[in-house]
Image 1 (tube, helix red, strand yellow):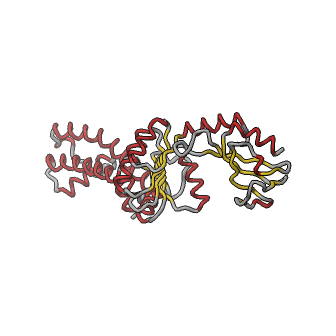
Image 2 (cartoon, helix red, strand yellow):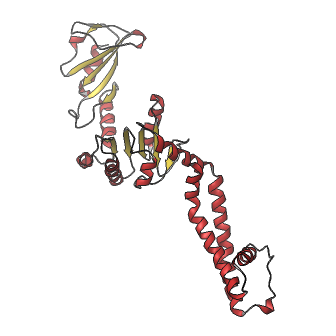
Image 3 (tube, helix red, strand yellow):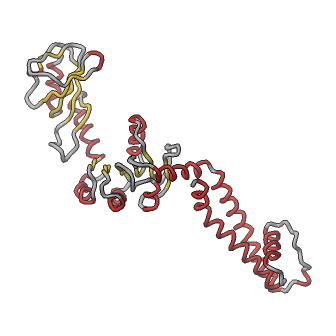
Length: 317
């Protein structure tokens, strides 16, 4: 499959090369009355300046001379460009990596397709690698992404989506530089695989409803989330996570606190809900009551309004 994919890339250059050779051969067949094979041989030798075919200039019609001058001037540059492009495509390592990625994607099942470009895509890839999840990336610019899991192509082209195995994928993550492109890709993905679980990262939070209408299961407004985190961090440096907009109130955040003095869970400020206690050794304990005491050296994970986190910090010492 990889050689076939490479041939598809060089096919336009091969066609152009064939046309250029035929044009020169046609001149020799017309004016020198050579057979097709001899004409091709003569045309290639003249254009490549090898010079094995050199008819007496005195016997050449003026029309033939003019046509050959024009075709040679045009074809020398064209031959060089096409052959250089052919060789570059065939020997370039990225071309074979892309071909392997397309073959791999089209044969995968229940995997994740990451579509787009930018830091969000790179971050998603790093996490998928850490979690051991099978994935394929479809991007217009490879950038820092490497390996045979990266397909370089326009995500808006359905052929590229199919090469990424979108028909058999379990879920997709879409993060294009332009929200309208992300919306178009979402529509195409849902058209090809309606049951697919789709997560979209958008720049403009006002387009969340449009993405959900297009079939996105989760829409993450990147700039809005960044703004919420930084604004909450200004209130407290204990912010460690957030709840996505549209699920609960926007002022709900997750906080992480180190315990420096014994405190009852029931003494936490109203509006703060404890989620888990991180015991010694890092074990997570989600089972506790109001009279449970957290001890120095442990950590407490809570959820609530970040404006109350300072009170929690003071309470825990």
